[in-house]
Image 1 (cartoon, rainbow, N blue to C red):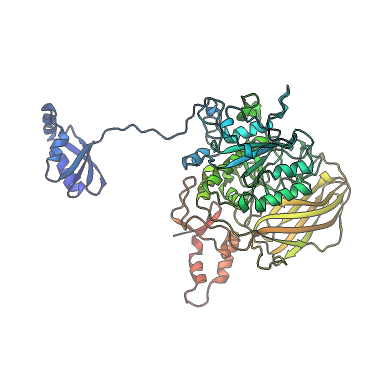
Image 2: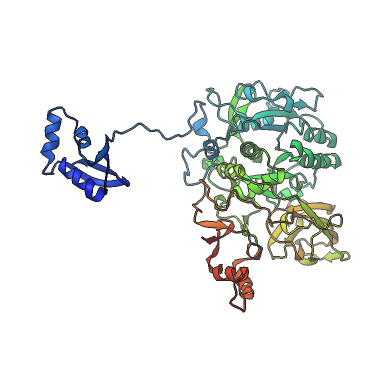
Length: 633
């Protein structure tokens, strides 16, 4: 075909010019730019043929026309899709980064989406608290950061793991490769944040004391951005354990002072005790407000057999599944300069999350530790949660589950959010202690205990009130004959039900809970004002006694989300360009039916213009799209 620029209208002038020269008019591209092509059946086609026979370019004949300003033959050009291809031999086996085969309908982690935006982790430092790091591994050596590494077990600066025949101390090296494996070196695979720096803190290959944990968590907090840990108490379904006083202090110091005051990012694997009916609700590292608990889902989108459920889980990444169904594991670096395609469990999921956070921080280094949590909540995909999962839709419109948190992490969407993110307001917290005396819950029965929270303010600074929830801690002191028979539920003022503690069949302890901090993130975005209810279910034949419980709500006074612009449109989500995000207090915290009733009450009696009358006029145009209230502009 040929495109000509003319003086006049394509449909009239362009069509006439085409017919005069043996062409056929196809279409207008822009005003005055018309596309035409040879028309062998045209009466004037002989003119076109004669020019060819005489060695004259037919385009030159078009240029001689008085109405033609410019003409050019359209020649096919070589254009390649800018897909990511690497010479690393196992790149095509990394199914969780890009869906090469098997279940292509399921999403991957959309890491290539972040890469396409230009983010590869450059300038970010990720350190693994583990059993050591083989830093001279050819896939890791170039990205190794000595300043982010140390050996707590041997009291030196060399994090090299202790080698022995069973390769027991392979864990840290495997985790590190998921983040920072070098690209295009014909070795192993590809790290998600392949330009990030990676370090190792050897602290698991010896006696692990409170001091060891605290020293590890506190190592170079203004140099290290992200700490990743894939360990915790025994996953046997028997213990209730967590960080000691020193480690708790290290978490708090890291969140308040790390990264120059923006807060260290602590990523934690949620645990592998699913087969033992264990729950991460009994893991104090997971129920800390300062850690990000990461669960796992399998290649085919199933619940892994090892998964632990709890209301503290924030999000999920991919990991291993059932090998007898063809589900693959995670590919990464291994000891002795080798590679492995058998990294498994939530131990493999948490490093993938840490790598995504390196991409997110590159997109916006000013993000605080709580900004990271918000971006995780908004940038994870609940549509990737297996269909047989119990989903909670809270009163703020978020879909969340105890298995997978707010969904599968989406690196492209999260970095897109981060690139225009405005820091959320400072965190406020308020505490309320239930005043009821000790209560007995008989066997095979349940009781509910109310707590009214009409205001959520602190005595220190009444202005630091909580109007929008982030995390809720419930500290429970409970005596019981058999701890594993107890279930605990929390109902928010919006009547959202969240399970703080599921049954643990193997836990026969009679120690109960001593001011244990249960945590839920499932009420994110809700309003804390009103009546809370704690429900305790005793499934056993003995008795349980509630001695005390208290509630701590963490969140913000102001509406926390400040989008990058009034119009929201992400390349990784459905087109929202015709909708405007409106974070309205009168709407965002009510279910749709309640919102309708609210607007009915707000309908003005007079015809004078008011904000409420305007809102009422448009209320039918409000609706949920994803997890936001929108109205059509």
